[in-house]
Image 1 (cartoon, rainbow, N blue to C red):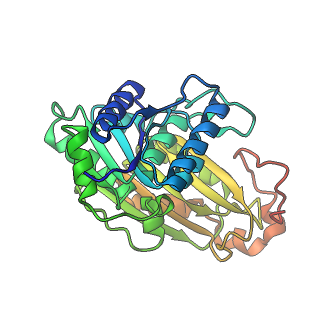
Image 2 (tube, rainbow, N blue to C red; image 1 turned 90 degrees about the horizontal axis):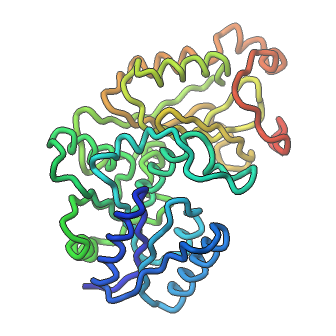
Length: 331
């Protein structure tokens, strides 16, 4: 079996630790976790350790803490990212409204409502291998839906019903290398018109939504509430880019997981200058026509569009304000 650095991730810490222990035995390497340290210090130490292993060509096994700041660790690793998902809880995890962790500071969004659902989606989207555990008692139809959801969230990931970590690693070693972690997410593939999930189920769909008009914030907030109530099926995940009529000149990053929603301003040099609304939606039993109609209804009407930006700024806007450091010009 090929030796490699492996990051194990997952929301269920006991199961993740057990699995990391099995990998450490298979690779004859100790498990690194640094869980006893304060979070920021722990994350810096893990990043340093992973970077050092990458630069030296060493093999390490990392039990990635549930509340870790993932991007620096993923940028540092030269190896595999294995995400453990509990087949009995996956769909609930993807809609969990709880915070992931107490916020360390004002900008720490791991303390946001719904951050746990977003983290569950991120873990799947970043993985090179997703392994299902405790799947034996789950009915086949439900298991099919969950595996399709995972494949839609990350079309590049290898997906396995795990029987042992050793078998999972062997299958991974026999697979060709996948793309870099930032290129794995299904929403990226969907926005690039190249979304081809390997595992499919007729109940699971990913669609790309485009709209050339800015959103009316009050109507958008209303439609989001209606959609969250299940009117169009179960919207599991959506990510993309949008513009709000009341905040002209600023492109926003759209991110939704379960019932939680984030709209964050981006700088104007992000390479999406011509984009108004471009969002990838993944869901179960989605009525795509109804979903599209509702978001179209949230866009400006002909009369509102003709009134121009000065009038748009006077429209009701119940959405959370953006940081004062980002003004309407994107500066």
